[in-house]
Image (cartoon, rainbow, N blue to C red; front, side, top):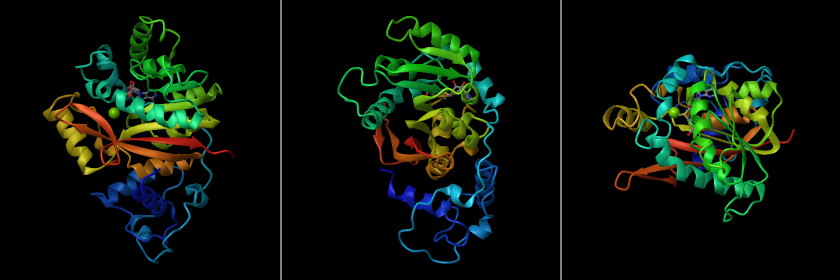
Amino acid sequence: MIPRQILARARSLARPAGRSSQPANHYPSLEFHHKLRTRCYSEAPLPSPAAANPVTPVSPEPPLVPVAAHLPAADLRSKSSLNEAELKKFAAISETWWDADGPFKPLHAMNPTRLAFLRSTLCRHFGKDPCCSRPFEGLKFVDVGCGGGILSEPLARMGASVTGVDAVEKNIRIARLHADLDPTTSSIDYLCTTAEKLVEEQRKFDAVLALEVIEHVADPADFCKSLSSLTEYSGATVISTINRSMRAYATAIVMAEYVLRWLPAGTHDWSSFLTPEELVLILQRTSVSVQEMAGFAYNPLTGRWSLSDDVGVNFIAYATKNRE
Ligand SMILES: C[S@@+](CC[C@H](N)C(=O)[O-])C[C@H]1O[C@@H](n2cnc3c(N)ncnc32)[C@H](O)[C@@H]1O
Ligand SMILES: [Mg+2]
């Protein structure tokens, strides 16, 4: 289930101007938030913050209307998702992918927790037994922005037929080398490419995963459009990222990059983060409906992550592709 606050917020954003019952913005800069939203929905800017402010009270349970209902049809062409400055950062640390104490330490530490979320949601989605050792047998997954393959590998061990794609050639070389060390992962098809190129090749997958990637792409709305096009109609899309909240600024940037130095300083740009509500909306515009969302909670005493209802910092969303 999507937490009730997210649905309420998504509804308020999806509602045409003048029907909103709450202020359009709960975050620090109204102007900034508006600009960012306009960027997310670049083909169709939402009303200005002033126009989106409450005018008329609404009925308590408005239907969750598809956001596309009051916006023009999305452009079908996909633009490049590449953000060269972001890719340079990843190319510079590509040799450290499999160093569990290196710059990707947080991803290694979060891996069991995000795999638990994937096992639970995707087994339910595809009617598979979550207790068996290879629950994803017979399913085609694509891991978009796979890096060195730290997610692709366990998915392949769980039986999925995995295609891992990344825009950084060095990452793909590392991923191939590492996967070849184990016969259960050597079947992963690693490609140096992008989601939009796979769309051009008319590739389709049962599950499309993009974990910790959307905050590094050129345009999140275009990126989601590509993810949607890659997903089979009966399929699932899973995205994880960081919330554009003050808490995320304090923990995921100040603590993780500058105090604990888990990640190189400058890894994340706060303004590139999306709130859960924004992610719900941009996916909705591409015929993908978020079904469940979870947050990740870090326990500093054990150094472990667990799933939580708190989507205030790191969060993951499981969504399904709507039938046309
Ligand atoms: C933070 S890492 C996440 C890696 C992996 N998904 C995980 O969670 O373990 C982001 C990855 O996305 C890749 N990337 C960034 N922009 C991309 C794009 N437009 N297309 C494909 N890969 C991209 C980067 O090269 C990097 O390997
Ligand atoms: Mg990131």
